[in-house]
Length: 221
Image (tube, rainbow, N blue to C red; front, side, top):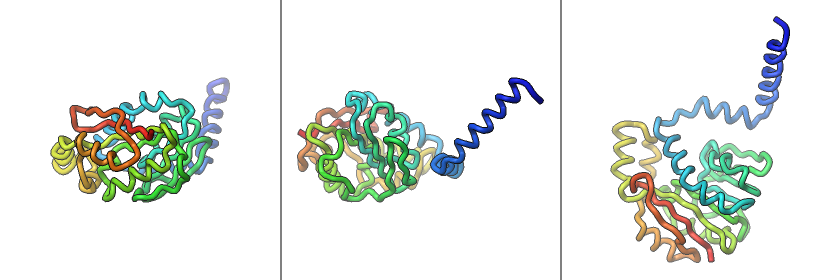
């Protein structure tokens, strides 16, 4: 076999070899093969990301921290063109640093390993409901957030509990372990009460996904 077609195949093969020589690509490929998410999980994740992107785009060249970035740090990868730097933390993620994106493997409790006023924007999507001590975490977020910075957050509402339990326990299209780990579901009043105990204020609140999710923008004055 010869000619342009053969040259094209050779070029594609060489490109693939170079790509898979990168240890981070190999690790991601391995995770994609072994990760067996229930059908609805990636869809719900994409919907959450789609909801917050227009807000993040209002802060170009920001230093962003994504708390609970997930094993594939999808939000950071999606927002990369808009960021000056992006750090993701999660117990599921593989530690790496490529260009302006970094991930740190850690359990999200009540302490963040960053200096005061390190970030312009912090995102926390579908994380608050898993925390045993949410007040300690939001106070810690207030510490590492810069003045006039924003926390952009989603958290399931009270209406979500029967829906998610049916989708996970009965239909098995949502991760049942994740749902069992939910400590609390929130409405607007409960979120306002939580943040009233911090230095931050809720700048915007709305429900989305037919009322089963809260979307909040919280400002540090």
